[in-house]
Image (cartoon, rainbow, N blue to C red; front, side, top):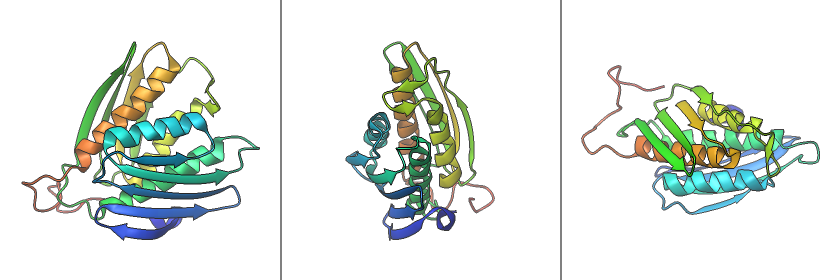
Length: 206
């Protein structure tokens, strides 16, 4: 999957750097799963930067994203491709996924909004997203792309993701969703000291 999406520049010790260059976007993502939540995000879409910073902070992943895209056309290509490269880097950083908890869940409130995320990072890509936004945009980011971000990340990252949110403020719902996904990924990626292999009765993940 990673090879189809981008080129791996570095990998090992639960970290990875993946780059992707097309006529539409040039993107490099570095992720360290055992980080402290430090992030450096530059996508050209301010609200997207804000959301990815929140995910990094609450997942305790160190995350660096550098993206240049055809924003003069619209935000779609940049937002989607960042999610794909992030998913590919995440999958590369997980490696064979041995020794991890595999499953994680989190519920995160933000004022009147609440989001719930349940994940399986065992290599099975699937996304069920329920984010009932009322408006069209938050800042420069079309809110319809938020669902697409999670679908793209799940597909490239080998993640099953069930995500839903409720609230009155679109900003709050989106932010709570990214925080909840971050917290659930943090739980799922954690090393299980009692697990010597993969968390599957089949003996393999994917």
